Each structure stands twice: as C-alpha cells, then as structure tokens.
Image (cartoon, rainbow, N blue to C red; front, side, top):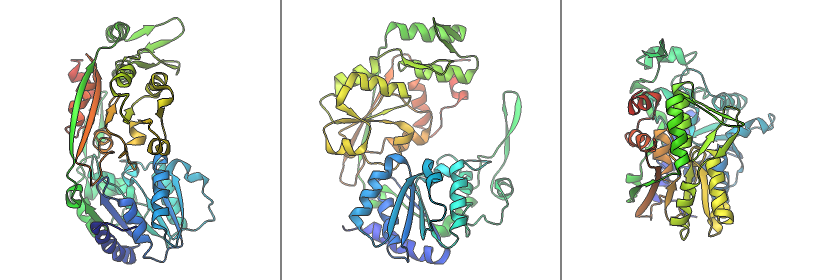
Length: 410
C-alpha cells in the first residue's frame, strides 16, 4: 500500500515527537486516515508488540488496515470495554488510544481513562499515541483526563483535575434543582497552548476533501395512538397500562420518554420496553428499499422495529454490509466514530441524539477523499421534539433540559 502525501507528512512529524516525549496526539479530522498514520509511524520505531484500543465497531477495519500495511510488529486490537481481559503480564511497546476524547470527562476520570492509566503505568517505557478528530468536542477542560496517565504530559505537575482547574479553568457556578454546582467546562485556551508541542492536527480541507453534504428533513405522521399517549403523558406525567406504567415524574424523564415515544418506542418504569408505532421504520423501508443505505437509530427498540420491517435485508455489522447488498443499522453513539460507511449511498436517521458530537461525527461516516456528495435524511415525527434537538446540535450545542423546558414552555 501507499500512504497519501499528507499522511507521510504527519508520520514524519510524529516520529521525532514520539522519540522525544514518548507520546503524540494526532488530532486528524474524520476520514483523513489517522489509523493508518498511527500504524505507519509505529513501523518506524522499535515496536514489536502494539496494543490498539478502539470501539468494538471499529476493530475489523483497524485489523484490515494492519493487514494491508503488513508491518513487522504484532498487534492486538481491543475495545475499551474489554480491557479487563488483557493479560496483565503482557508488555507493550506502543499503546494507541483511538477516539481519545472519550476519556475526557470533567471532575472525575472515566473508567476507561483509569484503565488506560494503569496500562501506561505497567508499561512505563512504551510509546503512546492518542487519536481523535475532535479532541475537545465540548470543552478544553476535557483534555486533562485524556493525557493524565501519560508520564510526560504537560499537566503532570497537578495532583488531580481540581488542582489543574486552578490554573487552566475559569470555574463558575450554576444553579441546578435549587443547588449551586461548580461548572468546570470553561477551560482556557492555554490548555491547547500547553498541548501544542505534543499535538499534530490535520483537517479534511487540508487533505483535499471537497465533499458537499446535503441534509433533508422529512416529517412522518405517526399513528394516532402515539399522539394520544404523548399528549396524555405531557398532561398527567403518567400513563398507566394493564401491566406497565410510563412515568415522567421529573422534567428529565419527561424529555426522555417523549424522545422515545415520538419515534415509536418506549421504556416502561419496570425496565421493559416495546415498540408502539412502526411508522418510521415502515417509511424508511418503503422509500429507500432499493438503495444500500446506512441507518442510525437511538434506542434499541428502534432497531427491533427496523428488523421487523426489513427482515433479512438489514445487517448490523460492517463486514456483511461491505460484502453484500444489505443495508446497515447502527446505534448513533457506537457507530459515530472509527468506522467507514463509504459503501452507503445515503445516510438515514431514524432518530436524533442529544449530543452535538454525535451529530457532527456520525453524519460524516460516508465521507472519503474521492466522494463529492453526501445525502443525509432525517426522519422526524410530525409534532415531535426531534426538530428542536436538531436546531441545537447543528449549532454545536448539546440539547439539554434547559432547551427542552424552553421549547415546551415548562
């Protein structure tokens, strides 16, 4: 295989940073080939045993890239949720953390951030590469826990996140449910300044991508029962059935239940869930059946609705999607990163996520350097809350309870 010119440029820039500091952060936008770049620079270093940590959905494509590159080192590709399965006695020369922004929680480190820190402590001489197209999607403050386990990180003098915040965050207070809570989201640009010697960035524009993404919003009329139930829930905050109850006794639960129900599914107070309305699944099937498409859904019952309508014409794994004529259905959060849906003619969204990160990352899954046009279809229920969520996330804002209360005049 041959690297693109810009990938060779990134490899040649990353190598001296790794030799100097033992780590580098490759902030390369989606579809620019950060996986291949990281594997390529690893081949230029004294690496014999490489650990690549990613999302489960991305494992097969990373293994495919490794086989295509055919370097001299051995590789183990694993998802973050399976890190506990690793042999603690095995030693690594290189650890690559894909979608590293997932470790960037504020205040306390996430489970995966803690696990990666332990791995790095157990392998003090290994090289480390962090990968992300969006290193700090919501706040510069998210950088701290991504790198806190790396020995030579620029914030290593700080005992914890709170001491880090003393110098790098403008801490404010917000009133939530009548209580004042400290807000650590206003990280200063000095965080990126401190990371600059360790980061290499590359954009789709720099790589020569010229894709034009066109978004289409389609309103679908749901069944009368859907509107009857949602109206009753908004009025009484509870809907009692013969065997189960839909309860929305807090504003957050009301927002979540309406988000589910307007798209035709619901999770009951008991924990059981069911499909209330197949209208969206039927619409997608009837209007896009002759196309090989990628479908993003939010809730698990939405997948069950799609399976019921599509039957054997739908798959949920990339290998089947890439080698057959079947369309694919992916959960938004698990499918928004680390995978390519370049074989899809269009993307169709059964529902929409509250996260702005989900919006920007998932809609780019079809993009390649050669592709000039992407079509994305959003299937919203007429009178539902999806359009309100869309307005927020397209402005790079997460849809929160504050937005919901404002939109519904609560």
